[in-house]
Length: 416
Image (cartoon, rainbow, N blue to C red; front, side, top):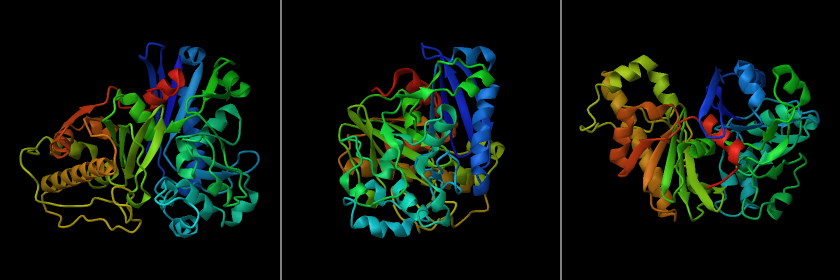
């Protein structure tokens, strides 16, 4: 059996699958990410809670585990793997000023020039007093994997893309070396490849096999793509979680930090896309789950909303507009909640359509179909609205859980 673990913005999930790909068991652990100082304990507690929730039968049969985390969520650790400061989350733009230093060194329009890239965050963190205790720079998935296998300083080339790692040459480029970074950058391996066996003390405590292998991980949106069933050029996956993440499978690599566009290596092809700060978090800010379900049933998808928003919880956008200071646009707000929700859903659909058009304008393959992952995949009204704006078929992924994608990654490695 194979175990995939997904760390999102509102909780962690684990899915155990058999060799045929069928799900044997699913467990989850919700959490809050509001307090930075509590994040590390929150992640650690959630990880081991998932292992504990699995049945003894599943644990005994699991022989490979892979973890995904949110892209560009990073932390500094000491020589023992203990975090020396609070992590920086995927959307943290406090290091935006460091882009000026990078512009003189990095290639034009490189993904590291984003205000939220891993490399920008690292340069900012190197100014903190706590850096004197730090030895390793890790992504969320790297650190969680370390808790299980005990090997420090290992990452995968999906997570390392925004650190400046050259995913074509499979090495750090010379311009990264010119930055003379004192912190040890992670050794980068292929996603899904074996890193090490599960620590013996953990294996014994939870009754896993001593031969259970921990694999290099990936990012949450790529895990969602793997889970979706999309496999042909022109097929895309939109992850509708707290944020809105687009991934289009293309034979051509597209990168342009001016618009928040970047491409992940995916076997012999490319996953080109971007991540917007709009998404389900803004819906949950204004509506309960019950209100969303009730109101969506009343929306007439054949009638357009006259409202034009840019729904953000706070200033700052990554894609298809890359502006750390972009203000939210949530006015005018009608008294009728049904009209307000309709306007929000249509506005997010416009952002998604604008994103895919932008990818194609810069050379990605023509969009043929969109699979939907994440919690928003269950919203049929939203899917119908999106279909009208995208102009292609919009279907739910074969499996909408990123944890399932990580389980597939553990089972078969990175394949098309």
